[in-house]
Each structure stands twice: as structure tokens, then as C-alpha cells.
Length: 318
Image 1 (cartoon, rainbow, N blue to C red):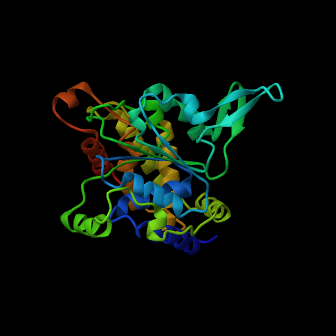
Image 2: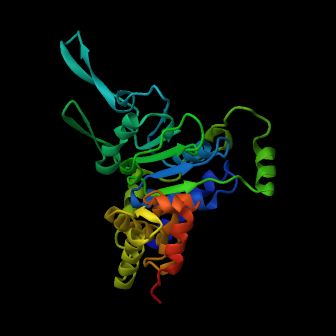
Image 3: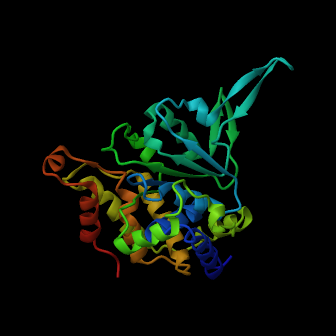
């Protein structure tokens, strides 16, 4: 596969999603980067901002198996992973697979469930394997988690553990639409009160697993110069030295930023990374991997502002 073909595949997926979703350009670009770099994405926003619709339409544009879990306070890890049940007919235990055994998993309102159940996704997201009663069960190729969550300030939410957040390639914040976008949403969706399905908008699958695998393999070959490797390291290490942060980004963040930058370059039809690729992805990739210091919290600062400062103050290669 070449950069033009990979970019065309990504553009076709984006065009399908936009049949139903108004705006959300940055979110769609980040979803495509996740797809090409085998990452996972966390989408945060208040209810009613099309988080679930966007995730469902994105999955529908891919010829992959789709699963959905509605996270609730009483959800247990076995409800996500599955469990071994005793079969009296043949006198042995049989695995009943949970919804995680799919290719594109929508984890809806993931922070509505306690950390014990949230942690059920940790191994699957990192290793693409699920261990049940000591037996490893590999997940299908193309496995990807699209998780939505409500802002942590809302009632009935549980903050995601740092180890869980670090598994997500990006955390994207969905803001309220502007007036023109909201007017178009009302015209497009205002005749129903229930959530429309991707089929209602004529969304079709435009990419399959072999095409996806070919595009992912091409992403690995995209050139990242030594200067840009140093730039990635400078950004990540600067987060560990900033006085406003108690904890900076992990070494995993540097690897993920390099991989994501390669995928973002492909979206532009290039086989090489430029500094603007890294800059664009810096905020959504780092915002959930850093922790404010106590002094910064007292001053009313937030992680987005500090990460933006780090990106602005870190010299980029010419």
C-alpha cells in the first residue's frame, strides 16, 4: 500500500461517518489515527454531543465485528470478559465469551462503572489477549476500544485509574457545537427522539481487515527523522519536569506519539513525519497522562493549559 491509497481509505471512512455526524473534524481525524496505529480512544463530553453516534458510525464504516457494552455501576468484570460455565450435558466447563470478544468495542459511558470493572479492559487493550481462569484467549485482529465518558464532575462517575488512561492513545474532549452546527443537527436529527442507527443514514462499510492491515503495515514504514525522535522525547520529558505537574507522561507516551505521528502523516498522503504532525497530536495524547500538582490545582490551572504551554515552549526542529 502507498500513502495515497491509505489516505483515500481513511477519507472514505470519514465521509461515511459524516453522513450522520455534524462537525467533529478533529475527533474523526484522531479516530482514524487510532485505527491506523492500532490504538484506542477515549471520548469525553456531556450527554447529547453525539459521542455514541460517532463511535457507532465509525465502526459501521469498517467491515469488522462490532460490540457494545453499556457500563453501569453494577457491571462486573465477567459481564465484559465472559466466564466459564459448567455444562451438565457433557460434564465440563465451557467458555461463554463476553462482548469484549469482538473487533471494534464501544465502551459506552465507561466511567459509570467502578474501577474494578474498568480494569477488566487493561490486558485486552495492551496485549490483545483475555485471560479467564488462567487460560489466555487471543482477540481477533483489528481489536480497538472506542470508549465514551461523561465529565468527571457529573454525578455517578468514577475516575479512570492512571493505568487505564495510559492505555488510551488519545483522550478527546467533545465541546458543544457552534450555532450553525447545532442548527444543522436539529434539521438532520430533529424528527426523532431516539438515537438513530448508522443504517438510517445509509452508512456502509468501506474498508475490511486485509485493507486495514495493509495500511497499518505501511504506517510502520513512515519515516521519522532523528530530529523528530528527539522532539518527541523533549515533549514527553518536559512534562515530567514542569512545576505544575506532579506526574508527567510515561515512556509509553513517547512510543505512542511517534506511532501516532506516523499515522497522521499518512492521513495527509505523506510517507514522512513533519513537526506539525507531532504538535497537532501532542495535546490529545498527553492530556490524560499527566497529573496536576497540588499548587497548580489551588491556582486553578488545568492540564490542557499546561500541556499547551509545554508544546509551545519546546523548540521544534526546522
